[in-house]
Each structure stands twice: as C-alpha cells, then as structure tokens.
Image (cartoon, rainbow, N blue to C red; front, side, top):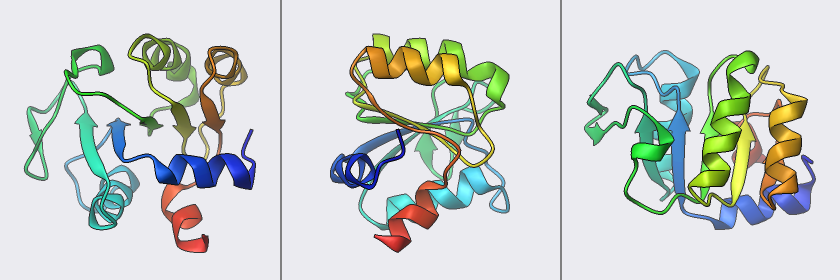
Length: 131
C-alpha cells in the first residue's frame, strides 16, 4: 500500500470518481479534483446533495455511475470508508485512494483483497506534483 509503483500505476488511469466532492472551491475535495481535471483526468463527482458540481454531473453514489471507473478517490471521514470500498469493488474500480487523514484498515484490506491498488492517508494532488 502507498508504494511509488502503485501510485505511478494509478496515475496512468484516467477516470476518477471523487466521493465527497464539494461544490465549494476552497475545499480540498474541490480543488484537488479540479487540479486533476486540468491534468487531463476525467472527474466524476459523487455527492448525494448535488446534481451538478463545477459543471459536471454529480451522482449520489458510486453504484449510480453508468461509466467505467478506474479510481475511487475518497474525501469522506474514515468511518464511512468501508461501504465505499465495497462499492468500489462492486463497480470494478482498479484503485481506491483515501485522501489525507482518511484511514480505514478494513476498507483498504477489502479493496486490496479484491485486487485494487490502494493508497491511504495521502494527497493525490501532492503526489501527482511530486511525480
């Protein structure tokens, strides 16, 4: 988990579902997502409170997304991760990324056991800039 090799593989993937994306530009979930979009990634907001975020269709849950999802990027509190990890496996995602401060060993283990690459407690934007 969190190996540089795995992170590089994740950055080769192109479609990122962002669970907990906020419409507020000052929130990390928003500006990290917009940075990744500017870098050429397809961003799919996941937030049950909004139909559209930053001009992109937002879905209430991962299971509602009709597109193929490569990476599930999680901006939710740690206690909410396990069902998100289960949904990531169900939709056939290839990776689960838990942002800074998001730590859930059970969710990470479930995703890894299902064959997903997992990054936990790390920032996608910071890592992308480093590499």
